[in-house]
Length: 382
Image: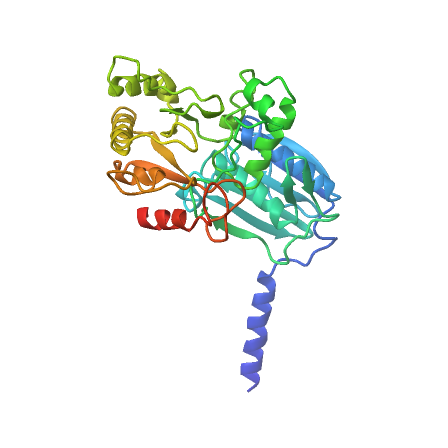
């Protein structure tokens, strides 16, 4: 019996010796360093600056450190360190490299100190890690002009250990810039408050968007969204004249529509293969309330889809299923905006529910009672 008690005491002593020492001061620490590589991409550097700002709003004394590979960034007693890995400051794990949007947060604690290592599989993932840490601490990005931060960070009781890949690859908020939006002038011309427009882009990324505005106007901020990680997008409209639309198909042009479409696609894609847009979108309706013969439209949908996928195989092509009600078409016997289902499978389709209505509740707009038919279209095509 004595031997058994003695053995148990020895095992307990061994376990205790492996435990980290108890904190010797308040936790989380009052003083923080945010460490980022001096040559980090603009988006990562901006996320580091946001960490500094929000930790400061939560009562922390924060220093931004532009570091290189020789800069110490281990766990230090009484200090909070947040390190954005990459560009020589360590490397993400194989698990984090699963996709360019995967991110990881790994926390190590020492005596009243903490080391938080943020990593991502790509430019967007590296930024998501920073904003997800802020979300975990209680920060909320409500609006481009309104961010909430608690008086003190709501630090979890146990060290943070998380690797996450978003469930949907493409997530966005879109601005319909043909409508008179407050931000419209800034994005279209760059002559209004450019800082307000860049804050809008920042806000979408802080909330996990992976697609969005490419930039502001045509000046030095024209590629701001691209530099933060959004893919480049382009597009045309085949027939629409509504809201200032300029159709690329001219019925008075003696050339066949195949030539007109090919010319318009090439012009929109540009001449630099290294900078071809990742997404190509187009419209096929003359307006929200007028239609063209269904056989003509299915032919044009097919021509455009095949041309893009053949000549620009790295670009995804898509169109819109608009929510306007309409009777079945003459030959295909479906609603006009459901015609993309007869195009090649490479054509993606986004449903447009209009205004603030969703797929399930009543939606008494544009001749509809609800948008159940759009939900059915999504399920059918999936």
